[in-house]
Image 1 (cartoon, helix red, strand yellow):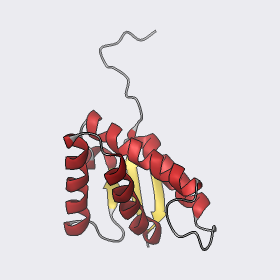
Image 2 (cartoon, one colour):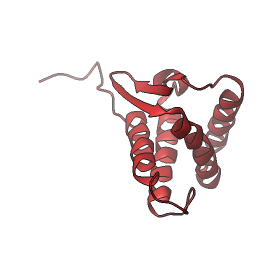
Image 3 (cartoon, helix red, strand yellow):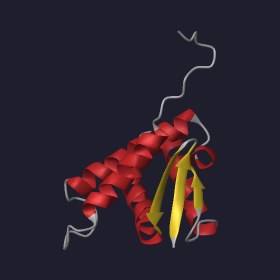
Image 4 (cartoon, helix red, strand yellow):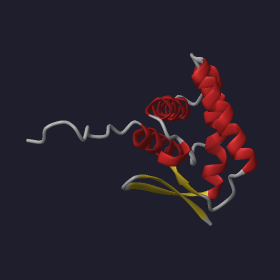
Length: 126
């Protein structure tokens, strides 16, 4: 079974095994880099959600789960850092490297989706 992660018109399918490893990685990194009370609150909310609502095969709507720009930017930073730490071999199981390229890609893609700039509807188009 797999899970579907999406943000507007971008999507990513990943195995449930991979999805089960990303939140603990994100919590570990988020705890280490949280700078504001808002960052800490975002961590608390996601922890609560993963404990009460998340299940294998879940369709994760990033826009719905991370509804504000501030929240999305905070989590984008966390997921980019997860990818970086996996690459540097400071996060995750280092006994084998076979899982690392896809985990780096998945974390980076989630970070990219969360950091996507939305066009300003009031801006002139030209």
